Amino acid sequence: METLKRKTEQLNGRNNDINEEVNYAEQRSRKRRRVEVKLWQEDVQRITDDVQTLERQELEVRGLKKARKPAELGKRVVETIKEVEKLHENGGFCNGLLIDDPTCGHAIPAAESLVETTSVRNREKIWNFLMDDAVKKIGVRGKGGVGKTTIMKHINNQLLVETCTFNDVIWVTLSKAFKIKNLQRQIAKKLNLGLSDYEDKLRQRSKYITCFSKKRGMCSS
Image (cartoon, rainbow, N blue to C red; front, side, top):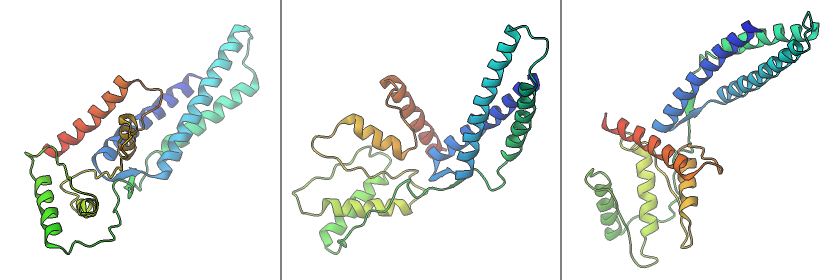
């Protein structure tokens, strides 16, 4: 059992390293973990649960003060050791951990083309503001139907091409009765933060700050 516990700790160490590497990469670029990596991590969690079950069974056996462990328990321990070793071996992932993620920002269909001089000029003005590090916030306003949404769709699509300028491009549509919490969750989903409904506000805020701090650090490097 001690051999099994030690090998399981090594396996979970490998899994933790992969998690840190993948999470960091997902926040920095338009990448996501490969399906085979997800399945492998699910197997790691399953085998970890199995090992914990075996540990409890061993304690029960000791509590009964039996001279020998049941043969069935010993057999399962040996089989589980082999499975843990195989999982650790398969955790090399020669094809890499990540693939391109097309969901990290997507093109918005813009039915209207910007042919009017005013619209083109406004788009260029907004674009120049976006490229200016001194500008922290941009608001686009005007009467309904003047083309604000069309301009911003073109801006969104152009930003997706400028991958060296921005790490994430997020398009969120809001209604007049929107809630901040729902807005935050939409953004968190795009950033792969995976916020839980049961997490308190302080923990959620901490995740936001950590995510944006990493992105800011990358942009300044």
